[in-house]
Image 1 (cartoon, rainbow over the protein chains, first blue to last red):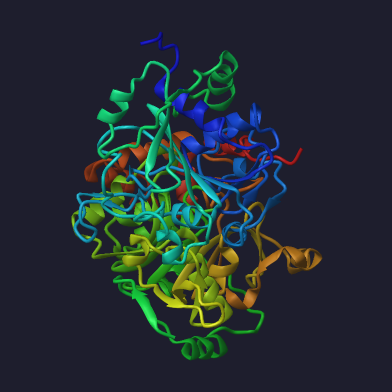
Image 2: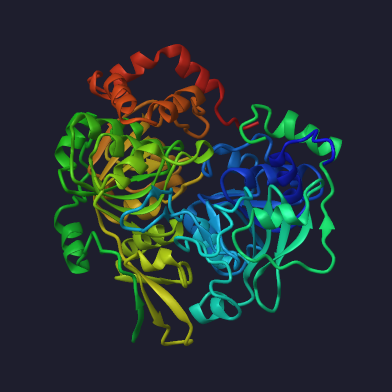
Length: 255
Length: 325
């Protein structure tokens, strides 16, 4: 193990932030995706166009939003409209990326945030679909950001709230979802994953520094595809950590 | 058009569009009537046991908190609720007022899952949860606002969100693609908090508009709470800002700090410690009851509630407002 001078969440946020393409339109879910978007905007993606579901587009994210509708989601933005505008913009193909979280994820990138256990008699009632389903349906590509353990990375989620590749190749299109859409990456506390273009199954792309492939496999409740070359993600830079700690989350709500 | 798939969820608010038109013709006056009233009067006149009710915007942002507390105070029960909510719906769930949910998201956002929701659903107190996405529930209101029975969407397809909804999947007769049909949602009562309204109910909002336009046009009764009551001339000076015209409105309640402890764009920011207080107290049923006793049942109205909070705290929120600079 290398010296851990940063937390798992800090690393996960940094790895997610580096996936933001400069100038792209990005639907930002609540929580960790907000931190990643802020970090990206302050580093590699200064022209990022964040879209928040209740109506904020193009905000300058100076302070961490605590809710998807609060003023920080449209602060100095280009527009402050309503939920129909943002969702319909996504539905007609204007949103490049969606950044999401969830309680469970399966090998095809399907996410669950409805219930653990049977829907009508749940062991745990989770918040619900929220905008996640819309984001996963309409954005060109999605990135899920999750804690990594075998309770969350499961062979089959108790519910499919947000569509990944559903049951495999062609399933999204067969269900009627817009073509050429789907999950691109999963960023976890242990690794960065992508999806095999043939089988649409989750594939390890890179482990985080100090994490072995075996550790990732042990924390994954399904068979994760392992390519011949597994990369190693770069640790957070001093500047990334400074931004996270001093400017983005000084109250340490997430990091 | 063949139905390819039907969600198994109950349509918990059936609707009849011609009846809705009749309602809008006969029960919604076009006359300029002074609709100002107290929150007690508005809630007791228009919210009733078993009604289908919704709130706008969202939890801690321009949320009709003073009206939501009054609903709890009056103990309106067996409510059927459409919900994306944070504090407002949490209070109703904790007070045991909710029977059925068209649920999209009820949680505490940055602070995680809602304990009140978990208790209410896992205990079976909430009898039904019918799932929808945030987009879908708003488009359902938009369908009602358009006066049509459904809107097609490409959301929810292929997922359990659709399976546990009351949507139906069909093949689009024009292009052949599959679409989910979302049934119109006509609410019995809606609660919306705005920045300014005149005494007739013409309303203007600043910041994001959420789904105020859709909800206001998709309900039979609309209670407005407003930070400020302004002369009609002020409305007429900026007619482009009017999002809700008076004839949609049944009651206008003057409620400064009506969204507290949530925020109101350009007027006040969130009271984070006050929100955290609910996050902590809502963890157990007992503590949640204590919270309700202190902040809802033992104050007689919004005015008394604001006194309990105190000028100093409110002023701090004013300082935290979004500013135009």
